[in-house]
Image (cartoon, rainbow, N blue to C red; front, side, top):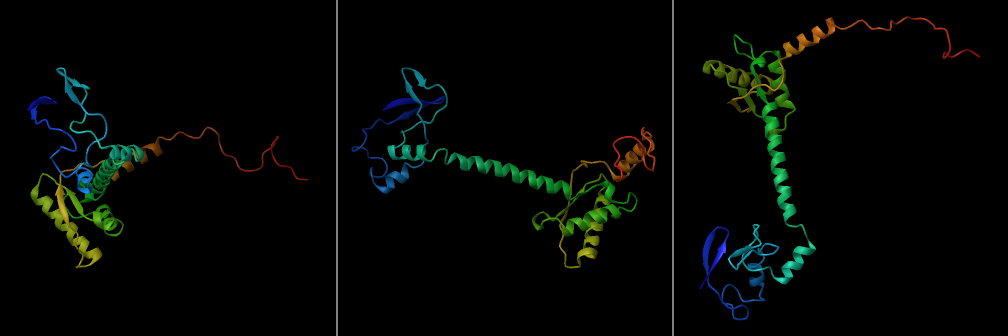
Length: 222
């Protein structure tokens, strides 16, 4: 028995002769043998020799790839790592899409009457959009949870009642509370900004005058 250093751990490894004297696993050359070794990683192996790790960078350990598997890895490179990269990108993309629909289907303070906590006209339009335009897999309403639990319950009940009015008694619309803050300004604040911009707009420098103009550039009759 000899001791091989793998990473930061000392692991005892049994030394044994190679093929045709190997006794571990399926018989070499059989379909079961190639299936057994099909998961070996590509690239050089890290070895422990003369008191050092060669190379010092993290590398795979264990038996080297079979020759036919090396040819497969070289011929179809970078498969299967491209599949893993695509899976990671798809996972991030799907997460972003789900979070986007989560934000878009959330009802905030400005969607409700501040006294009765019933849906106002903006909230009703938002609910109608949710019931008609949102894909079915994302068709769920969320309510930004207020500090008052009673107000939260009344807002949830208002959405459920309005959904039955718009889509019928058989309509099923899950409504859940969540901690959220609006990502945009309320409509009344946007209207105030717009009104202020219109009131403070400068008078155009070039005054418009109707009628024909003299000078060059104009089209003349023939």
